[in-house]
Amino acid sequence: MFYPRGATRDLGSMESPTLARSMEISPADPARSPVGTPDSVRSHCLRILERGDLDSKLAPPVGPDGEPLPDLPSGPAVEIDRPTRGPGLRMTGGSDRLPRPGLLREPAHRMHCLSRFAHHELQAVEYFAWALVRWPGLPAELRRGLLSALADEQRHCRLYLDRLEAHGGDFETDDHSDYFWRQAPAIIASPAGPRAFLAAMGLTLEQANLDFTLTYRDGFARAGDSESAAVCQAVHDDEVAHVALAARWIGRLARPGRETTGARRAEPVSDEGSDLEDYLEAVPFPMGPARAKGRRFEVAPRRRAGLSEALIEHVRQARSRQERGRDAQRDAAKPDGASG
Ligand SMILES: [Fe+2]
Ligand SMILES: [Fe+2]
Image (cartoon, rainbow, N blue to C red):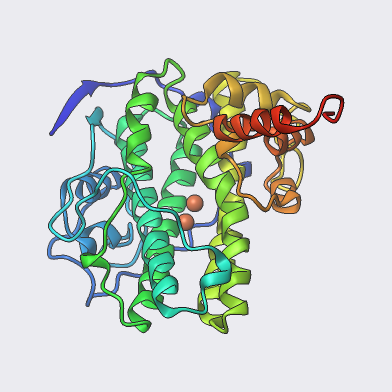
């Protein structure tokens, strides 16, 4: 189900070492490693996408010696519509709403959330693998960042699965929404190419997760489940780095050869506000600012990710179509002169 597409434009001249995150990849767990070991980042990613079992998708990107897999040559571009999923991992359209944090005292609601979060992470693993084979000509530094994020997502998935297991849940009998993968056709169709991926994944889904992880961290903690709360915090901390990676590279890819203002993650990643322009130009509908947040809006982690104040404020004020509809209904219900 994949189609070699020929090499993409070589962007290697933009490589810079300043942003490389250290690869925190633990050696393969033999008990969880599938038979046969990929010999490159490319073959590792293809296995994630083409094999349907969980162990193949969660095997860390290291060789038998525990060393990171080589990334060169990265091979021709490969277009894959959707990852292969075996029985138990099949995706379904749509999804019911997540239980509110206040309901997490009920173990069934905790299990529901842990399963959903684990599946978000699994989709993120596949999405990063998808990007790495779809755009093999991306700068080596960005590819290292994407691979490091992939390994983080694998670890996050394991962490949520371990918590689900501790509750007696069974991931492979739960429903799995295809929410992330439903966005893929719009990314594929976008002329922004990998910038559309960074905008949809890093600056929308992952930016929103900066809020959701803290909302549910506190929900689990209030419910007395400090271990699940700690997992949410660990995921949150890594998510800051993933948002920072997307924010920095969306600008670099938009303006090759021109370094943006910030050289370190703690500094703004762009000329003030240019990250907002880059985001709005590249983000494929229906992804967008209104989906880049949770109900609880956290400014501090966005600043830590290096987002400009302009982008943060734009996202904070963005209203979804449903919210605009509710606003209009509320205004219409007010007596004359009461609006504003
Ligand atoms: Fe994650
Ligand atoms: Fe992430």
